[in-house]
Image 1: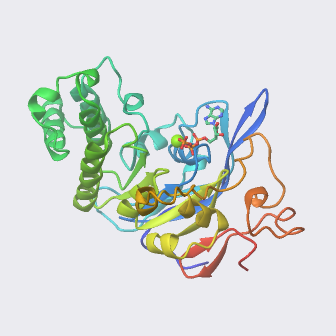
Image 2: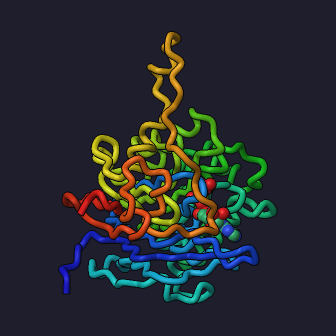
Length: 345
Ligand SMILES: Nc1ncnc2c1ncn2[C@@H]1O[C@H](COP(=O)(O)OP(=O)(O)OP(=O)(O)O)[C@@H](O)[C@H]1O
Ligand SMILES: [Mg+2]
């Protein structure tokens, strides 16, 4: 048996989540492999539609029908909250009943999620306090008074101004930034070991975004949790992530630490992503109106499934007879740096 890495928190192997529609099958997640360690921030990047959110929903067993996990494992290394032992129990999340008590105990308590759109996480007809208190009471079996006290404390922790008043406000009474703080408070009130943040700042202005990013980093240090940070903004990744997984068409095509992904990307898709970031110096130089080097071609439609490597029709380093025939395996050209591409190994 291979030695078990003590700090391993999450391991996804060959995850496939499909939507069977009348028009065909959407291969939303089509063989995701990745690993996460305790207290790490893993950035997940990739173009719109590449399967970032559905991968996250699969972990929490919240994939909306007709979506279904077809194959693979999501191993969560769960250590007891009372600190009685450091020995992790390995739970395969794909095997749990999506409505059962085991996943409900994990959701919000061990793994929390901040959604792309804050209003999906909060009910518009109940106050901020009612919703956070409900999560606390569900997992901690404390009295209503104690839950209210903890809620005010948590709202203070996320630097909400005037938490004693906000606790009785409805979500629509809050500004976008305050609402996202409330959602973060709700996600963190039971001190999860993993927070999944799905584009948590897309709807915010840059100043508020910076405040929320700083807040998440501070709370991560304080609570010792890992963060899976989903975004298509490479600038945010550079600022937040320790490690990065790059997704393309439902697969993780490369994973490494953040500086390797920026300075030594191996996958032609990752290399292309870098070239399509606007550079301030080019934008400011009036002499040369440089066009952005975008990745050529289009993302194929989600119903089709290409033979070989899914990136081959757009790849500048395409090898005929190989890339269009054989699906590349994940290889590790250097320790901790994995890539799915025929150019390596
Ligand atoms: N409820 C659904 N029914 C059918 N197809 C869906 C559903 N939800 C997502 N999909 C499809 O699954 C694929 C992956 O979607 P997903 O939402 O995971 O993308 P994403 O990487 O999060 O994109 P974005 O950056 O735009 O949020 C897409 O092709 C999408 O159209
Ligand atoms: Mg998404």
